[in-house]
Length: 229
Image (cartoon, rainbow, N blue to C red):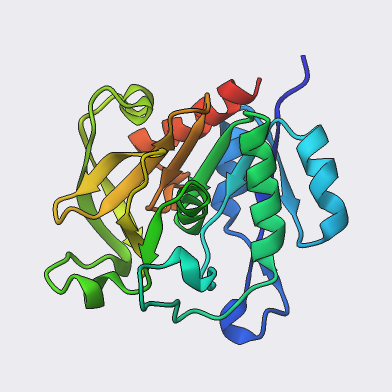
C-alpha cells in the first residue's frame, strides 16, 4: 500500500533577504518516523494545484513573516517582514480545508489556520500582555493544559505536557469556527482545532524540534499520517 504523501510548506530566511528556503529537518523526520513520505513545497504558483491534487496531508510550518493587517487586532500590525510564502501557503491551506484533507499547523502554521477561520492575532504578546510567560525563547519549556474532550486530547493522551516556546505573535481573539484545545498557564492559546474538518489541528509550539526524543506530542505526526491514509 502506498504511504501517505505529506506536503511540507517550506519557510524562508525572511530576516536576511528571503533568498533561501529553510525548513528544520525535524519536520521531515517526524513525518517519516510516523510512516509518511514528506515533500518540501516551494513558493511557486504552479505547484498549488499539484499539491492539492496529489498530496494526502499537509504540514504548515513555523516562520516569522507578516500576515495582512486585518488579521491582527485593531490598530496593530506585524513587526515581521513580508514573505512570498504567504499567498502560496494560504492557497494550499484553504484548498486542503475545502477538500477536508488533513492539516497540521505548527506555530505560524497554527496562526494561518486560525486567521483563515476568523481569529485575530496580537503581533507582540508580551507587549499586549506584560504578565505573560516567556514565549519567545528557544530551548525554554513550559507546561500546557489540554482541553479534555478535544481531538488533541485524544491524540496526546495526557491532560498536561511540557512544550517548547518560540513565538512572538499569538491568537488574541478566537472565532466561533475555531476551538482552543490547549492553554499555557498565562491563558495564551497553545493549540486549536477546526471542528468542521476531520483533522485540522494547530499547535503553537515546535514539535518538530522534539522529533528525536520520546515526547507525547510526536503522536500528532502519527495522527496526521493516519488521517492521510
